[in-house]
Amino acid sequence: MTTTPEEALEQAALAGVHRLAIPTPFAVGKVNSYLIEDDPLTLIDGGPNYGTALDMLSESIAAHGHSIEDIGLILLTHNHTDHLGLAQIVVEHSGAEVGALGAAAERLANYTAEADADDALAVELMLSSGIPEEIALALRSVSSSYRGWGAPVNVTRRLADGDVVELAGRRLEVQHRPGHSVMDTVFWDAERQLGFVGDHLLPHISSNPLISRPLDGSPGRTRSLIAYLDSLGKTRGLPEGSILLGGHGEPIDDHRSLIETRLASTDRRKEKLERLLSDGPRSGYELAQSMWGNIAVTQAFLTLSEVIGHMDILEDEGRVREIDDDGVIRFEAVA
Image 1 (cartoon, rainbow, N blue to C red):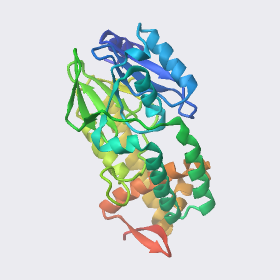
Image 2: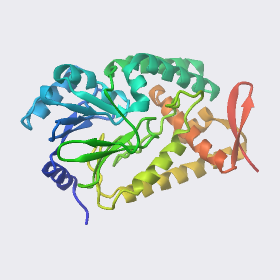
Image 3: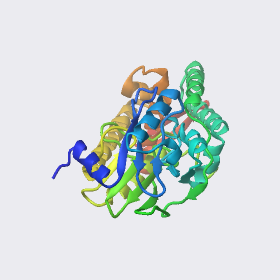
């Protein structure tokens, strides 16, 4: 039986969970934070770091009879600006603990330097993929301008995959599900079959698996799409009929069908990209242009991450290989 979004939110509210829709300055629109009425009063994600978002967060919490000062615990699903920007400000108002994946704690605390390192990797990857230098540098400038919407946050409760966050009236299992980001974390309430999934799974848009630096500090880049597909397989195993509360949009009441749709889309895109190599080797940038045309500068790294992610899969399947063409990496179909 299908549950409407309104019914899903009502079920969540009966379990003491309230969605707080927080405005962002980004094209994605509002971001969802969640207030859990328990002991301690818990906030999952908090919105971007700007006044309008803070005002709405405060008003939304007040609508449920609480204040920011009452928050005792903040749980972070991942390290993107629209989710973590207000966390430290909430801490300064409330003295709340911050729970997040322990392996990401240093990145969260050193937000600016870590963002610089991410940008450096992105520029390096764009240049080696044939993206013109002026586009790569322009995108780095855009990324730097976005940085103010985020802020450092100190993690006081370091979590790991399989840990359990104990509240007075519920247990939230920590499930590390990397892909969209290296620290994507699902908080799963098995008793209520309710999951907080951040941007790991969204109802109406795909969760772009962005290439980044490995979480363990090792050199090179992540194989984000491969990691994401593995994570989706694990999430698919959650009980049928579960309600998953995402970072954007409405609740998900049939996660298995949605995951099958995402997997089928990945397969179709993989096959199309392989066919584009039938006329000879192409760079990641050339493949992205063939797929999406001359896209906006702000989308250049996103689409490149998509292309390289699918090439990673094709390489693992023995259908594509990389060749170095005077410093530019091209992909070639294997006969």
